[in-house]
Length: 442
Ligand SMILES: Cc1ncc(COP(=O)(O)O)c(C=O)c1O
Image 1 (cartoon, rainbow, N blue to C red):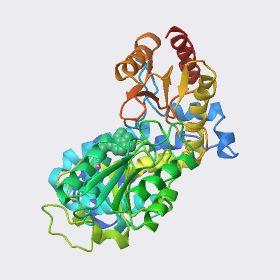
Image 2: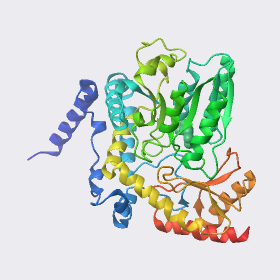
Image 3: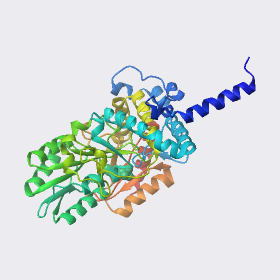
Image 4: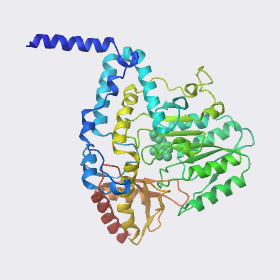
């Protein structure tokens, strides 16, 4: 029989051994990357097409149960960052403990192998090679790197972006143009948007600015939720000798995504939005043949042949990167096509009835190719900034529904609604009831 003292001694030896032999450093799978028992609590997805599974409320209740959600609000503002599912959060907590306990011993001996393993997994999930991605702390850092270090813009050239692009990236494009003596051209995405209208707008803008060298494109838009036809626009640009940098901050995990399908040499993706990894993880992608077009990072003397010399972050949140495989695994159990279909189902659950309310203008098209989870609206065509902020505030204060107002659209501000997997059709119905009351009032 094992005595308590034996047990304690063996436990102490086991724990000492795990410190002495950090498995990530020895090439064996790291304990940090092991699956959580709670992953197994999530039942397998039921049979059927993604669109059929999207309506299986019993299944989605079991998915929603994996998220510890506050009861302070009905949160329909999942666009900021994604909540970690409970098994992912547990892994993150454990990883924080390990990093803190093992400190520099961990960071110097175990983390290099772990980060390479995670990089390979993320690259595979995105359909590229590990040598074509590097970690950043967020999409802003990744895109500032790609835009700021792009070296094919010269004096008299043009850089281009649209009204719907993310403000920080618009500013990065402005700064690039200023440093290089280039000019900035902008275009407005048509409202209402359609594939043909978007293509016509980019065609006209590129025709009007034949010296354009770099075009910023947002894939899944943060203001209206519009999924831009990035591939078609990038092809149009390439035919004119224009490079595209794609802001796919919202794409990975919201919609099925393989980076080569976007047809762009430079792309940034967040993992802390729709993949549900801890805050502080994103990637930048530079296609192998385009590496020379991005300068080495300021303060880096790494190999010109390696993407790692293009971003120099310094000390980072080790535990966040360690936890990425747990987030990918959780997502994989559901399956991105099923997840995307469910998000779209929750979006349609409020948009379809809201379209029938007089005074509610839905800004995002229903074309399945042009929308995912996110959709925005205005009341009575009013794009006033203060008014939209007030609408969002009223939705929270009076109806208990959390949304956010968005600015920067050519036609004025709007309110953005972003459901997540922990939302339900009942949340959508609650929003529709609130919109009925508010539209009738104004
Ligand atoms: C379209 C888009 N691009 C870039 C970003 C910046 O992402 P991060 O805050 O993670 O840097 C966001 C953030 O919401 C976004 O919506």
